[in-house]
Length: 233
Ligand SMILES: [Zn+2]
Ligand SMILES: [Zn+2]
Image 1: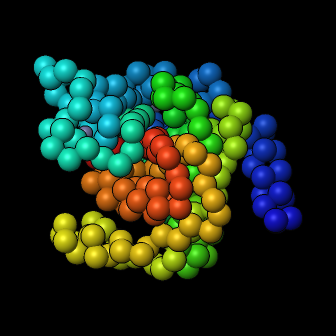
Image 2: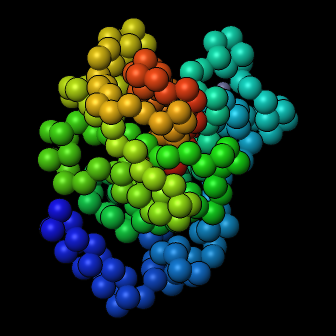
């Protein structure tokens, strides 16, 4: 805990001393962001999407529930993805996730705050990493994203969900194997509040988030919403 405080103080100090730099093209940043105005204007905002699963929709279709959500309504009551998982957001996410680039994480979090979802703010639950992954990586990307969001919105972080075992990367599996992989993957170790907003970096099929919501619902959660940085199209 003390080390965390030291890191935070060093990061704060670093931000005061270093000029803002666009993390995409290296031009000077603007308006408190490590992003230039031109790159900001080109961001792939996900502003036309299914309100239930955040799937980006074609512009000529209404922004209503997508076919998949109509056939099988999801467990969450709403989902927002700030961006489509496309350049340059995909690169920023990868740098943040696998290359210790915490500046990229900070930028993504600041951008998420530029389009706060309309759904009522509820306590935020950062999707947990398994303890072993956390030790390998040294930080938990969902928590790094969610902490400034909670602070800025004045809502608590709720961290009563944990990974009960490490799962294989979902991207390597087919649909049935994904479901098997996630069975019993989460444990709820405190009574959840009635409403929670689950926060994660990327949503692909949504199977992992769904497994988390299912575990929480079993423990008494009444209403879940999702807020992710980027949604795979
Ligand atoms: Zn730029
Ligand atoms: Zn949908």
